[in-house]
Length: 383
Image: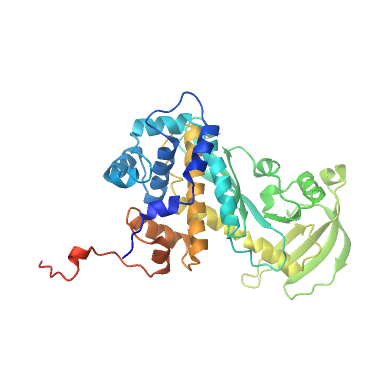
């Protein structure tokens, strides 16, 4: 059996050390760190995500047991007091920048979305992260309840988080959406929580297509109506919105599509500016928005986004951005190995073999077995 690095080392190989140190120098605050380094912080937090460690004490003990393997990674076992201080004080923007670099690497290998059109497709949504107000006083949501809100724009090419931000629980979805700069010629799909006619007008002026659900109380008048070309298309209209706000901004006419789900019989009404797509495609695009719900579910079930290792806003943001980096590193391994395993299955394999010296690509392909030392081969073991 040939020599292999640990599974952790092979995953972290995606992050070049010299590039990381350059980012660390750019995103540093205060006096220079002595024994504790940002690289040791990153390795520790990555182990917490990949190994499922839920507390600083648990993480410190786990890293101490693997100290020789950390040495070969160029990292040290950080005392939990030092790790806690760095999490709270050093800017989380280091991992935000690192996440951007990893996203570029993954995007070059990511498979395209399954639609025939060539537009980039993004889904927008948010998810609440419930927090204790007594522990996280900055996360004010209600008088006796704390919460943060994770906003994500999911790229359907490989289902990668292209836009990520964290806000307090009071921030509306549309407020974060207005801050996005979507590429020209792309398409964004969102639910009724993003209803804002001024934002729709901005998207159209930027050359961005959108698909959303129409609210039941929306006021409009029909300009033209095309005959339905599919059994489940209820109507396909060009409408002019007649509400006060649409008229105040001179909103351009929109397309209104009615669709009956063939499986559930439920009826949906969509608003879009994409007149070049079939009505059935509009319905399928909105149905694909469910992938962002699955993304949030995967994050909360598999990565450490419920038990935080720090209580300050910077510590929480640091942990969330490291979780996004870990997600992208796992996605990269999935793309490179071209395995049919899901990300959840990949994470389980990594969790069980994190510090084992095994070939990660062969492990994901199911071609690698648990190595047996040569001295144990051809030996009769008596129990």
